[in-house]
Image (tube, rainbow, N blue to C red; front, side, top):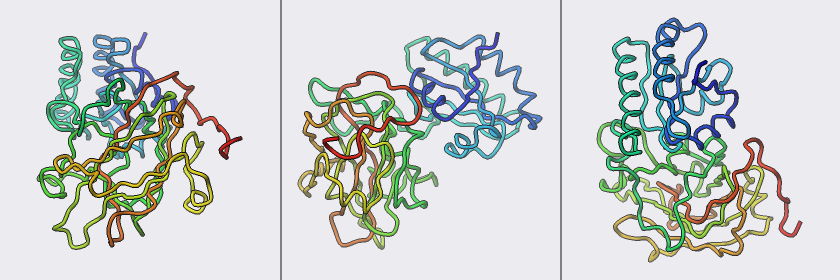
Length: 333
C-alpha cells in the first residue's frame, strides 16, 4: 500500500504541513509523460523513507488542486518541493531527467539527515544557512509560535505585487537585505519582504492552525535609504483578533480594536532593524486569527515595508482545518 498522501484540498495540505517536520511534495499532472516516468521512483522513496510525523511524501494533482498550485507558483511538471516545518527549503522543476535524478537524491539526503540528528539540511533553499534567524531571544517563559500560522489562509490587502510573496513575512531565514542597506541580496533572487501598493496602509489577515496565547510580536522593517522613493516603517498598528476573514479598510476604521500600538523610532533595534510589540496578554487568549492593520507609517513616503513578523506566546488546542469559525463580529458579542 502506498505511503504517499494524495492532497485533497488546501486545508488538507496545511494540516499535513503542520503535522510533519519535513514534507516532500510532487506536483504532477495526469497528462504529463515525465511525471508518469518518475512516479515509480518517487513511490519507492516514499515507501522506504516515510516516517510518521517526521517525513511525509505527498502528491498534488495540479489540475484538481489549482489553488495550491497557484499559491506555490508551480508552472512546470513535475515539480518537487521540500518543506521543513511548513516552509519551503528546496525546489526542483522541469522534465530534465538529470534534474529529476538530482531531486530524488536530494530527497534521500533530506530523509537521511532527519534520521541522523532530527534536522533536515536547508542548503539550496531561500533561507539563511545555519537554521532559523531571530532578532531577539523569545521572551522568558514563552516560545516562537510562528509555525502555528496557516500560510495557505493568509490574506493581505493593498499588497504590492512587485515585492515578495506574503508568506516570506513568516520565513525563519535571516532577511536577505539586512546586511545590504535594504536592497535584495546579490544573485537576482526574489524580494523577501512585502510593500504596500497605493498608499502606506496594509491589512494583514493571519489565521492560525491552533489556538494561541500571544505575548508579543517582533516586526522587522529594513530601511533602504539609497532608494529613489524609499518605503517606510510601520508606525501605527491596529490589532484585531478572531476574525473569520480579512477586514476592509473602511470596516477596520469603524470597529473597536483589541489593541492599538504606536511604534516609536527608538523602538527599532539598529542591528536587526526589528521592533518588539508587547501585547496585553489578557486580551490575546485563545486566538484563532490575528488581523494587523498598518494604519500609517513613519515618514512622508507612499509605501510601507515589512520584512519579517514573528509571533511569541503559547500554543493551545489544534483547531479543525477548514473555514475559520466565526467568533463574534463585534467585541462583546
